[in-house]
Length: 291
Image (cartoon, rainbow, N blue to C red; front, side, top):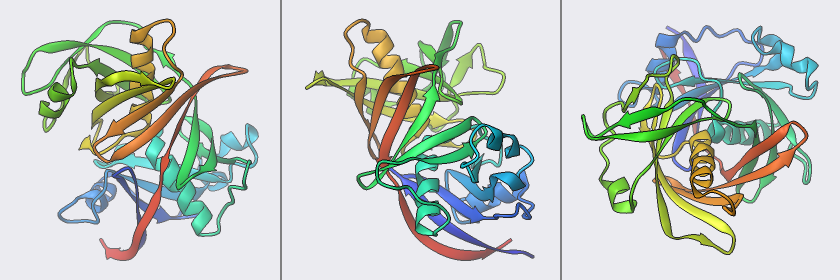
């Protein structure tokens, strides 16, 4: 039996188990991660973040050639133990952990680079949390339909890639959003080879105030289920809504999720348009668990 020290963190209710393993010595296999994230038999979380030095991670060490200052790798796993490319809320909680535990600094006006399976991401301290530059995004080619509500009507979805895969569905209003049943995995047709997070979106009324777009969102996360929030999903939802609104749609968005409120911003960069996500990040408690 092994004792693991952990920290519990959350960003707009999207919660994580963080395990510090700087030298990459822990053997956290899929079953162990799933047990730690189990809400009845473990700590309980939407995902697990292993805090490991980039240089000590065979899959991430190559990123140091791109950004030598990306000292720490966010080894993110879904609640079922499967690997994930990136987590927007998790990256902000990861930054909170690094700074509060003295492992890294996020100076005022500066950036904190972290390594992820979706590349190096830059974070900045912002208010009570952090803003993360998720990098370039892209529309996914091809039509896809999404059926939720246990076999309900299939609706058209829009594929968005922000380092991990998403399909976004527009609903007629917030009443339809609140009534949606998301206990079961939505059915995607065609099914993406690696699966996808699925976001359901409703416009606020009015949808734009003072140049800021406003939407509400619920999400079913791949390998997890419905969560109170999804950072990359929030960015995908705002990008999809801007796409549907067409010319003149804003580049700044307020997105309300069951766990709180997040901010999304689209901006030009040398390699194309980037999307950034801002919101709170909190460390809740620490403990030890025997597994």
